[in-house]
Every structure is written in structure tokens, then in C-alpha cells.
Length: 343
Image (cartoon, rainbow, N blue to C red):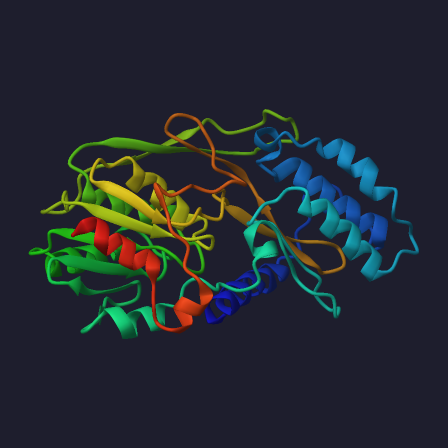
């Protein structure tokens, strides 16, 4: 529950920060129900990067949902229409914050269907499996879970190359004697794709393409930037080429997922746990004329072979789901399965 609160608090904070910009793309719109609907619809038409990939007819959706509103519609009626329309996108990076009302914040995708993270608690895991946990400056918690197997939890991906080179170097120096490593990316929040790229580059001995990204840059269905290729390349003095298991769950989202894409290209890596959230694209935060905030996914994030896990999530190679009662009793079956596989 604590981790879920962190997710929602961070999401709201992003909206409130962006609200001071008061930007609405394209034409100005009146501050009435129809004007607010049109402002959001037009920005999504211009900026949302997943209509093509998901096969969504956004123009048809405008006709369907706008017809339910009038100049006299209430905030609650406008909210209901927008939420139903956005919910069809099934996107974990889509949200709506009805600032200045008593209406609840809306989150799409997995965050709209799972209100608590019932299968993972880092503090319980630390108390029951790590005898002498250590921490880097801001992003990682680590220790041996058994004599020869190291464990590292990545708490955030919210920084760049220099910071994460230092973080992962510290961790891998500590685990020089380890025969295998467990990397845990279950939990709240995304971050910067460059962070995951940097970390994963310490686990490869050759260049590997793992992702391409392209940004929506116009209202046409095929208006996208030229795809950018993302590679991991050998980094650091001692790449860790021994067996690695990456742990995931349904709250593994965004930069955590693109890190998973990078690690999946490595021959020594296996994934264990649950399917990830399925929200890869970067997002931007915008504002309607009435001050409500919302977020927009802006591009297509694809694997090296051109496929996509948007709206689906990355399935683990070995599916293991923790039960809430076990977690509350200090038992983490996902972690225990990983240890069993590595012993």
C-alpha cells in the first residue's frame, strides 16, 4: 500500500508542477465542457503515440463521446465522459487529475485496475531475507541472500549515466565473489530510460540492440520521428557475465520495463515473477482550460525486432505470483523461486 501511495503522489505532483505552464496545443478553447473536451481531444490527436499501434480510431471516438456533452454539462458529467474515453486506451501512462473538484484522480492501464500493490513489500523482504543490507547513495539496496547469490533492489531509475555508473560499480564490486545475482525491479515508479541502459551495459560483453523509440510529431496516423536505436555496450572494468535473474511484477512500469527489455537480450539472464505493467512510452503532462491536468503517451517504444508490449506487459520466463497473506507473513515466493533456480 505504501508503494502505491508513492506512485499516485508522484503522479499528482507531476500534474501540479506542469499546471503552472498553462499550455494547450494548437487553437485556444473556451472554458466550458465542450471547449475542455475539444482541448484534450485535439492534443491527444496531435501528440498521442499509440493509436496506430493499438488500432484505435480516435476520430470516431470523438463523435461517440462528444455527443454526450453540452455547454451545460456538469464537471461530473465531463469527467465521466473523459474517463470512459481515456479508459479505452488502456494505457498506464494516461491519467486525469480534476484539479479544484472533489472528483477522484483517474489512472489508466494497470494503475486503474490495481489499487494496491499486494504482492511485494521491500521492507518485509529486507527484514526476512537480507542479513546485512547495504544502500548506495539513492537508488539501490543490496546484500547476499545466500552465500553465493547476491541480491540488489533498484528503488528508482530517476537519474542519468554518471550516477548509475557509480551505483552499479559499487554493487558489482561488492558481489565480485558471487556466483549469480538477482536484480529486483518490482515496485513503484518509472524514471529515465538512460538509467536502465547504463545499468544493463555492465552485464554485456558485446553491443546489443534492444529497443527503438519514435515520437509522434503531427496529427497524421504515421507522423513520427525517425526511430532512435538503443544499444547496450560493454561498460565498466568487470562486466557481470554470470547468471542473473530479474524479478518483475504488475507494477514494473516504464523505465523499469525498458531496463527489462535490455536485460532480456543477454544470454545469462532469466526473468521470474509476473507480467509487467505494459506502459513503455514517455509521457508529457498537459492542462485543460479549466485547470485539470492530464498525461499523454507520446510515442512508440518497440523491441529490437519491432514488436511491442504496450498494453500487454512483458511476460516472465517463469511465472510466479506472491500471495498477499504470504507477503504479510514475510514470505516472498518470487524471490525464493529465483534462489532455487540459481542454486
